[in-house]
Amino acid sequence: MAGSEKKTRVRTKTVRTPLTKEQLLKSEQVVLDSLKDNPDIFDLPESKHNANELTDYFLKITEGSQRILPKERRRYAIYLRKSTDTEDRQVRSLDDQKAECLLLARQLNIVVRQEDIFIESASAKTSGNRPIFDGLLNGFKTKKYHGLLAWSPDRLSRNMKEAGEIIEMIDLEQIQDLHFKTYQFDNTPNGKMLLGILFATSKQYSDKLGVDVSRGITGAIRDGKYVGLAKKGYYADPTTGYFIPDGHNWQLLRQAVVLRLQHGKTNQEVADFLNDAHFSYRNFKDDEPTVAKMDKKAMSIIFKDPFYCGVYKYGERVANLNDIYDFLPLITADEFISLTQNVAYSFNEKFVGRKTASKRLDFGLLREKVICDYCDKIMIFQRTKVVRGKNAGSWLLSFYCRNEDCIRKDDAKAIEKYGKKLPKGVRMKYISSYIEWTLRNLTQNVLEAHKVYVGRLEQKIAVDKQIAKRKLSDAETELNRSRDEYSKYQNFQVSNPDAYKQHHKGKLEEYQNLINVHTASRENLKAELARLNDALPTREQFVELVHSYLETLLNTTDLIEEDAVYQEVVLNLRVGDNAVSVIKLNPPYDMMVDLDKNFSWSG
Image (cartoon, rainbow, N blue to C red; front, side, top):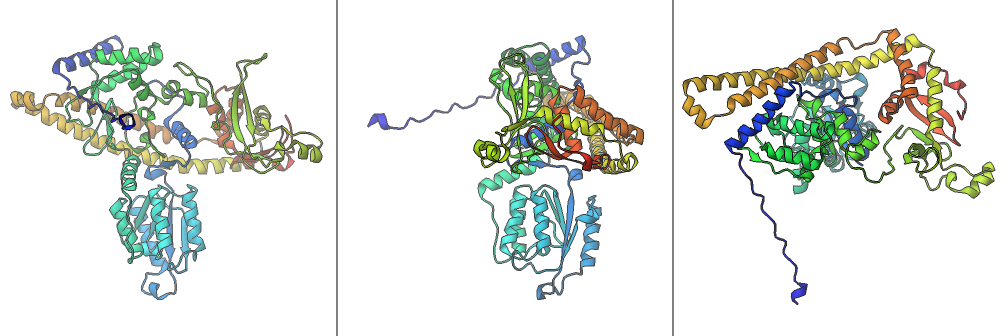
């Protein structure tokens, strides 16, 4: 029957419109006119939130997500193994393996803590025979460790089961970095196949096509590189793969953000502005620009893409480009939050667009830190808008136990055991009051606590310095390269003006833009290093810091700011019937109060 025939969907081919010289001149003139009116128009404003907070947000709301860390922020472990089996009689001693692995770590500029060196005497021919090795792998699965060093692949496995588990953990980015003294591992499909051959020469490991593609993209995400998808306002450097601001197009897109946020323009009005200014895009700097046909949907996609503030997200992988290299964001974290309804809701900030019905969120305060006293399960944060009564328009913050077997859900059992029904949840005001009371009593062992705090902070500052120094070195290298290219084209323009105009027109402007970008990055990184050199607090400043936590909780209306204090101070707590029964603090704050005297209190 004709009616049963499937209709073939006709796909419309995208037509690319090259940017004309007249359109380019007009586009550049729009930017110049804006600079005349306001020379600072393209400077990003101060932001109370940052890209790290947004990275954490996307990790929390995406189940199974994995944060891709720069090398300086990864925690590395060393695994050493030797057994008395025939297989190991010719293998170097444990002391030799340790010395060579530590030398390799120094060559790679990797710091390995003494407690992260695992030594085991057991055979790897069969699986399940090495408890220390199993504990090490569990450390990677729980995100305690990120990088692994070993003397040789056969130190890790000589059996198919554990070999496959290691390769799968590399696929899932649970092991983000793997190095051997005797073998250079390449994290590619072929590299993993060769590693599998070394693990067990009788079998070969091969990746499915989908895994191949996904792994290749994830590798690029890990390094903050272009993965074949153009980002308007940026082009990809063909040498490094990094995203570079695309001159006046980046500036036009920045103006679009300002029009949306500060002037209240709709997405369609912003799109009309970009179309009138002949906004264009390109994948690489040598590509011919293509005219971008913008509409309200295209603007919505851009404003909702966390890439533009430096959070590179692909599937379950999330990376902060600001940690990886000198990425110049288009918008601040605060601006991105304001432009995206769900994110603004989670950060307790104002959304600038048209709102839809509010939703309850699991993301919020004290995530996975509140434990039900009755069933020992994690309680879930909920925020519900009050729609009637004298508090209409305000928010009710609570924690609910969603364990169906909890006695909170069985009124009959609760009445039989406690003589009353139990509340299904606990109001946040009781929990926050107890934490505030605890902070007021952080007065003991201040000297010892300060030493622990400074020691912990020194490790973080050392990592931050390494990142800043690497990025500064990269910025200076790119600045010198751009200056050399600019000088080369400047001389070429003077000596061969016709050839320059015909084949290289626009190169001087392009490299001048890169010089400006890298110069600004270099100055910002120098300022960041100076700040880090003076970042350790005195004992008095430490006491003031603890006092500031209490002040923040008493005065802030920002959920993220409030939660930052909880994350810093609270390890976990247990709650019963609108009361906190037990609270545990993170070090060094656990040293500053006698928690044995804290008893159940309902505020």
